[in-house]
Length: 283
Image (cartoon, rainbow, N blue to C red; front, side, top):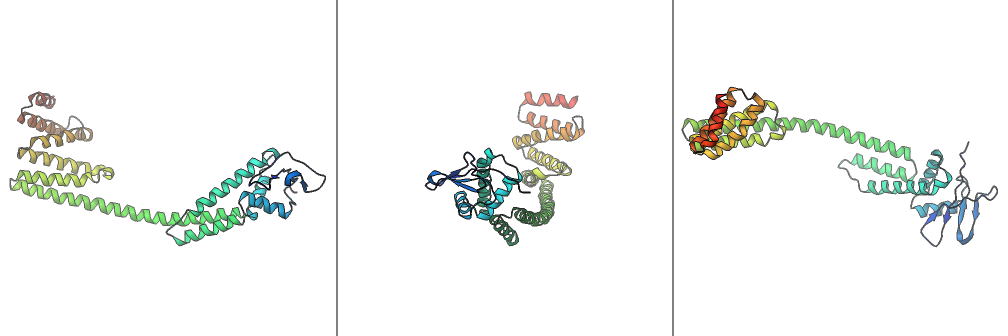
């Protein structure tokens, strides 16, 4: 059973606009010709081809698409007084989709082909087919994206391991310089190791926090031996809260850090800063 709705379309031939106005019924006729070229439609079915073509042109859509618009109005049982606004809204969404689709491009020719097929389906008013084609393009993209993510994760793991290994090599040179009593060179190597680890900081697993801790302490120790107190203090002040968080304030390594930091301040003559730290160690 056909769903019958009353539509009034006022199509102004002298303007690029049209509108639904008060609904008029002229017996069983499908159209009523008003003044000044107005065309009043009394039902969706049976619209004369000429008026249907004019309406599609006014909306800027294909006739096949317009037929689908009418089906949507029918399926949604849109009230007569809302037909004008609703049809305009449908046409607007449709044209926005077409515009966006025209701007899409993929590196995958299969995806591009599916989108082109979907665009053709839209032109033909085959919306269910267009939805199916968009979903097929989605599935293809997702499959490739999943494979790419797997490769990316593997490469990320390789990157992290090799970066940490590179840091270990720099730290080994730091140890070598300490053996040769070249404390400034040792400090430089340890700090290079730290920078390599810090490049990974955003993705650094907790297991590697101890590695950063160790290199930071070694660098501060070497700087102290080289008499370069200020950068040593900067490192230990950064290291202290991290050790407290990771190990707890009562841990021996925390006490060692406090003691070394106090010693550096004392060496610089900053006794007012050294004394509270020594007190913390004694607690």
